[in-house]
Amino acid sequence: MSGSDVAAIVVTIVAAVLVGALIMGLFALYRGLEILRETVTTLQRETIPLVEELRLNARRTRKEIDKVDDLLTAAESVTDTVDSASRLVQKTVANPVVKAMALGSGTRRAVRRLRTGSTDR
Image (cartoon, helix red, strand yellow):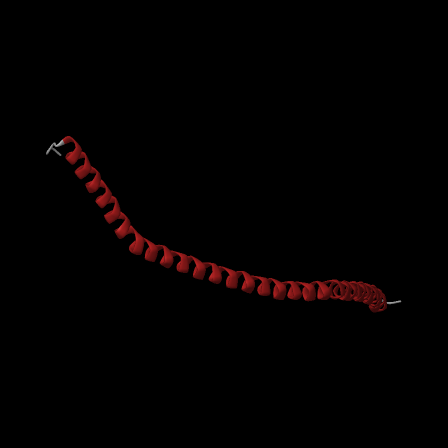
């Protein structure tokens, strides 16, 4: 055997080892891809129903928020109506009540003056 034969054998052995390592690496990569596929499938199986439930809850929440908004609008309307009625009662009743109280006070003073006959205030 010559030196070139030995070199060819060494190169062949190194190439075979490298090919073996490459094949092992490819099998490891393939197994990793299989695990990844299983994980993605499991993730889809578990998350899709959760997302659907989340969407349903979001729709229900939106409806409830709309109801609360309607209630708040109605409450604001009632508050505005009560405020308006309160202002109307105040304008309607306050002035005559003040006048009646003033008349009563004046009448009381006049009666007191007539009884005592005094002119002081």
